[in-house]
Image (cartoon, rainbow, N blue to C red; front, side, top):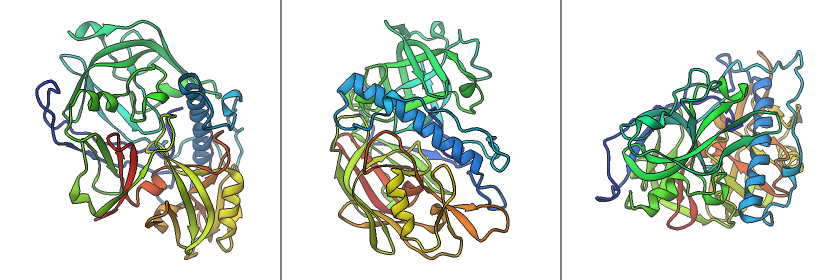
Length: 413
């Protein structure tokens, strides 16, 4: 599914409005707020939620690989996950698959239509389509629903939209174009899907839909994603957006960067593929300043809480932490009092992952062993490809630039 990691909701404020046909705006600050994590109030990691999260990642990126192959060919990621079905793990007494702390999403408000209809969606750099429930959906629960007849700019488009995953979860519907606004940044004739059928996996989510911040090759609709439309229509002066993800003061900034949130220069790295992902290379993972994995290709994904590495890479990484041991389903434990310094680098600065962000909590209450936020999982991308999510992004200011076709990092203030 689209959901990944712990449940995080973003309170998105709409700061005014702007017509891209009149003049671009210099950027909009969108406050984000974290609601919960995979770690409970007693500091214990919920293994059941963690396992389910890994399966969701596998399923999501299986679908992404199919989309990339359809849109751009499969040369860059030869891992072959597109052809396999990934079942959900069975329940175990030790780790029941129930969400004690709901799954995490970065979400906020988007409005569609004229007059505006409001929806809560996730902001996800690991996908590229906008979809929300349709008023004709009988299986969409209590979610807000899009009514085409209420918008003067709504236009039904040819074709259909469907997302399906190895666990059987699906969402399908009809493509439309309409006016879409996020935080005062408005585009016209934006393609999106009005979903007419959701499986039960989606019905229970606290969000209505999803807004993909990836690039066109990831689009199931085979159309420009929202931010590509923003740039093409000149709705902002600068073709970039940036995240600060933290316990307090989190935000998405659309149309540039918020200089109050970082210090020093932004270290940019060129995107190295046309797959639609924000992919940068020459990465390395270090423990106490020594490289545990080198020559990494990394996908920077705001919709993933964990860092997912190929199983062999994860095993090598944890061998560098004294006392670390495999847990199950790709998770590892390490002594809670360990002082190892974990970091990522792309040939420039070394960007540390804080102990708080690396530690997902105790294995069980009172245990001296904790669970690490780097997990081993075969997502189908092939060797040396790591999926880098919020575990890392919470430590840096992260900039996604369409203008420069690059991803940048800067030190948080």
